[in-house]
Length: 349
Image (cartoon, rainbow, N blue to C red; front, top):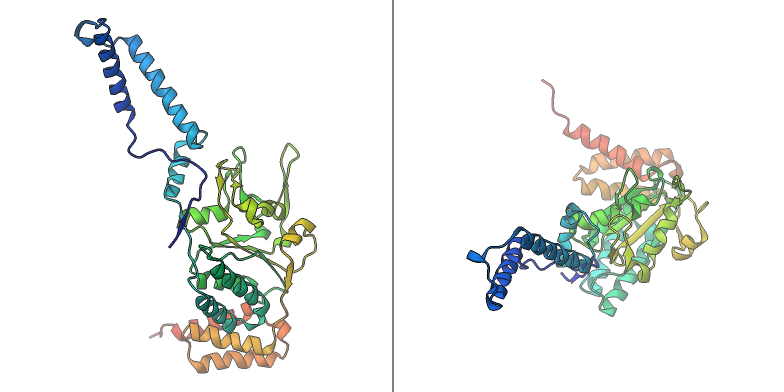
């Protein structure tokens, strides 16, 4: 799999001399210089003053190396975490248009009501292959529709078929942009954002980042009057040109986040700012039909290896309701959960 330079820093040479080696070399250089000048001290002694001068030179050298690396402001533990990007990060690619067709077909057969969303990522995947991109360049998507129709499930299925990690963010429990961008030191919860954490955990630079119910995210205001909003924090990450040199507020260095696939879900677009909507035109997902619910039951039942009779019983319950709008995919999954538990319940003696 291809690799890219992910962190905009210069890692020190692992074969560089240690502090002990540098000190030894400087001491030997000083002794050789004095011998050459005929000013050699008895037994080649190095005075305390000489040692202080040598240590100052070593400190100056290390500071210069640290500044050139771009990590001079970081604590040792943070530098150690970034060490994983010394050789870059991995991109998981789609090798051919045929493979893109297979992925889109698999997702569509599972969730046909998400056809328009699947069509978009299918065309993006094929275009990336034709352009020779190292990995799929999938445009951000904002999926809008009633709860329980599988918007998040579809995003997770996409990541599964692409064989990349998923970074999930619940906007209702994340009142600010910190969950996405991270927060600078000084906040009690200072740390990198979840998408970057996902990349650091997996080493894969093109995860699928899923932001659920983004229209319900709140705003946090600092003691200095600064406002932090989730949709606004996303803006530089949704544009490829700015995401390529995205500055992390926690590490205060740039990362190439341009390969991340962003899938946002919402029940409505009320409250979402115009700049955000211009980057992610809403894609409205239609309500589920009875046919969709029954087909999903068959698919999920087969995935769990449940007996056909058990799945048919669940489908009869769904049909008896006669109102698809009252049944969600979560309801179907819970019914199948109950069936699976009943089948696997141990016998009491």
